[in-house]
Image 1: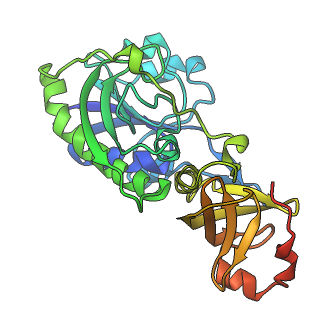
Image 2 (image 1 turned 180 degrees about the vertical axis):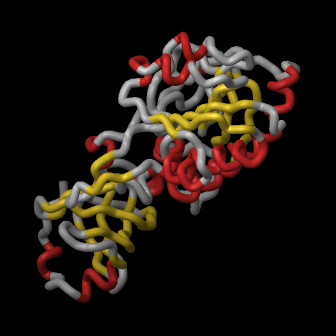
Amino acid sequence: MKDLKVIFMGTPEFAVPILKMLNENTTVVGVVTQPDKLVGRKKELTFSPIKKYALKNNLKVFQPEKIKEHLDEILSIPCDIIITCAYGQILPSKILEYPKLGCINVHASLLPKYRGGAPIHWCLINGEEKTGITIMYMDKGMDSGDIIKQEEYLIKDIDTVSTLHDKLSEIGSSVLLDTLPSIINKTNKRIKQDESLVTYGYNITREDERLDFNLTGKEIINKIRGLNSWPLANFLLNDLEYKVLEAYFIKSKIDKANKIIDIKKDAIGISCQDGIIYLTKIKPFGKKVMDVKSYLNGIDKSVLQNAKIN
């Protein structure tokens, strides 16, 4: 497949294994990624993970602010196929129609479920038992094109966004490699998505990050897993934001939810609808991530006795 000329479009770490596979097995003639961003308190100019890989491997990089305003730049590159993965912009029709083999997307869900930018987060938050990778043709809609191939992954209880991200990224690379020969030979399947089964995994908002201890223990744990290790679930303790990385749930009869009702040497227990959520790893306001045991050793525990949670 080394004679296959590929334009790759992607931005985050999730897309790097896919670009790496393409660079090793095809000829990548151009890489399109999002513009550099100012990151952190010091506002340091930061390259996307895809740009870092491309520069390290001497690949030509394009970073249009709005791709629809830079069509000539992209359409001037001779290519056979465009492959995208978590690029972050909708492709105009002229680009979709440009390569003879079409535009292919690697998406981190079993479409038509979880179209959108945060499918990994939402499949965990919503307590799905399985997810996977979809290789698909792109069209004018958001993740609505014909399915070429899918591979399932059974979600484990210990999976978080972090672990699922890494597993699905590697699966995506492998499935794309297996699928490319049939795309090149035009012997691949084209399966229309069932629009009656469509769900969405839109980008996480600040509101989505807030924990609600009036919900069930399972729902709360799922949200903590579904936001770990970014952007992290949070709640307010005495009006200060605490982020939660790890917790466990014990089912029990509760008189009132949303209260600190147990303090162990290594965990803080907050009542929920059907039991107690024990926080074990947190990021207190203005501090680094720490085990709750370390946090409790550094404070006056009486402060927690009548603490307000919201």
